[in-house]
Figure 1: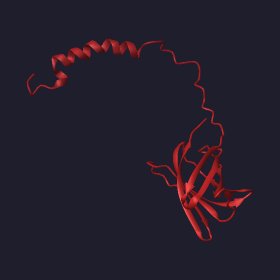
Figure 2: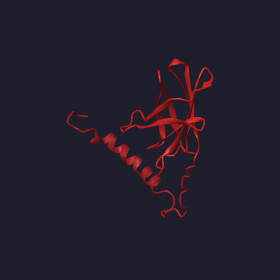
Figure 3: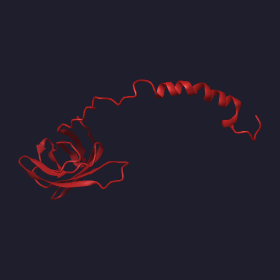
Figure 4: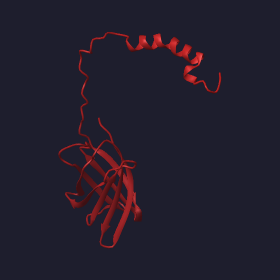
Length: 156
């Protein structure tokens, strides 16, 4: 083949394309030309709790849950946290929660939780399903401890 000849016009390329054309046409027109009569099954989103746990600096441990773990809701998701240090529940201060999705260009959501009813409680909005990075900062008089955890929010 001469350098001025394009590969698309070479005899070998044309022969290959012509030999595959009938198979491609048969595959693309296989089956009935009628549209399907059954409608696809809609996805059912079910509210569920997403549990998580993290260790903060200074020996603090945080466990919690996010509910209903559904994005795109008119109402935010509730978050409940328990903070422990040496096995004892911490009842003072606040936990600041930041939620971001690495690799996505969207503003992170955040919540300042307060102790109420045996746990720290707050609200967060989820823009979409996926894996979030949750930053937790526990603040009391004299302590500021932080840590992070991966939070997969999936549909069920």
